[in-house]
Amino acid sequence: MKLVITAFPFFSEHNCHVLEAIASLPGVKVAAATHDPEELLPPQYRGLLCGHWRVQDLRIIDQFRWAVRELSARHGPVHQLFSPIEHLQTVCAELRAEMGIPGMSVEATRNFRDKARMKDLLRQAGIPCARHRRALSEHDAWSFAGEVGYPIVVKPVEGAASQETFKVDDPDGLRRALDVLHPSDRDQIILEEFLTGQEHSCDSFWLRGRRLFHTINRYDPSCLEVMRNPWIQWVVVLPRETDDPGYDDIRAASLEAHRVLGMGSGMSHTEWFRRPDGSLAISEIGARPPGAQFTTIISRAADFDALRAWAGLMVYEEFDPPTHKYAAGCCYLRGQGAGSRVRGVRGWDEVREKIGHLLTDVKLPAPGAPKSVTYEGEGYLIARHPDTRVVEDALKYAVSVIRVDLGD
Image 1 (tube, rainbow, N blue to C red):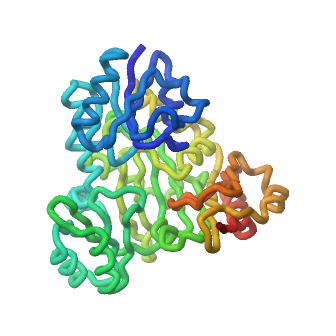
Image 2: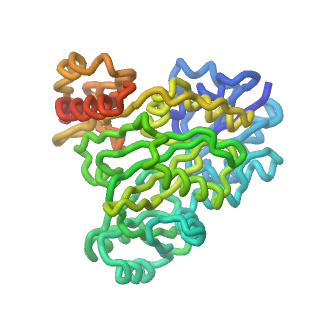
């Protein structure tokens, strides 16, 4: 049996599905290093782990190294070490290099993880992306704003999933962002021009630098707009027409971007915009599976298990490309009103009656559940159908009818 060690801070729903995907591979036993105690792992997943080690902070390489060594001492040589979490990509690569474990290099993980470095490399290669600047001080930030003008986006250099990301519309907004982020040599930030247009993602599966399968999603509205307005119930649609010639430019740009950054085997998530003039600009790329139910959307569109396929690439470098059979999409059910807990859900019966036959996955917000702190919201609906327009119309109808009421 081959020992695979994975790592993440918390036993979230997504991370538990990662454990399940790895454990489902033939000839594999899986161990995990986490911040959570093992007692917080939901009972249905506890039998998947051969071992567990808890540390305070996996980003500190000495703590992570200690966990890996202890797990290896108890369960045998480590065949593979990786994480679904972007914040842990580089420390995993550093430990793989120390232990002689194959996988993405330290340099490549830094290319994906450091968003300023990423954009430097993309621009040098002529790949369209937002104008940007790395800032080590407030002076750097004010200088960029003076050159580019407003609005701009301000975020940590090593951010992920729109966390601590600010859209800045004026000098007062920039001051507020800087008061939160405090740029320095240690805590560097990146400032970017604010991209406008239709936001998309391109999710891809790679084997030794070759793209074997990809999907394209459309967001309505953009992630940053959703972060700024916690009441918005947003929609993501994966059209069946992924190979439409209208996407030729992003396919070519994505291929070149991954070559420049050093993609090996695994899965990547590219966020990009179609500008009002029809041109494209890449926002950023992560060398990891996407969150926010995107792997489920991809799975439903192609009738396969996207997380298991990713795990197979990471452990065995094997991948059998599926057939893109359906359009699929997700609407995110988010609480409205004042309050810290879900008080109730209205409109579900009407939605179920009209589009229930299209729904493959349903998670309704549970009364009494705490208000979500992420843009995924308190629940979601996933739909699929061979016709993209049917999926679009169904999800737009759902968010127009369902209301999640908050209270205390």
